[in-house]
Image (tube, rainbow, N blue to C red; front, side):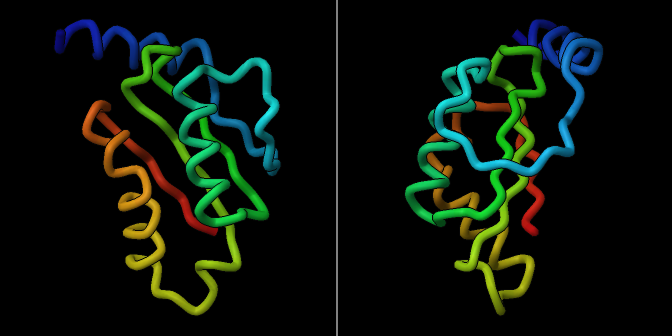
Length: 104
């Protein structure tokens, strides 16, 4: 299992690069099911102005990179912003190996 996850991560680095494009989209047909699920939960909770969710494990669903900006984070320390995101995704985080979160 560990070597499979490692292989997925290696593949992800070669196949998909993190995009710098800002967008909020729930209708992205190229998204994985995991990306769509995470995007839907974060959109429902925070009504973000910017949201990028990317499965950077090559589609395995083992590692996600998330960038989010929302009025809900205004005035909160960075640690509380990150905590809000991880609490929202608590159930999803249990089943993955890594999560990279950037709150704008």
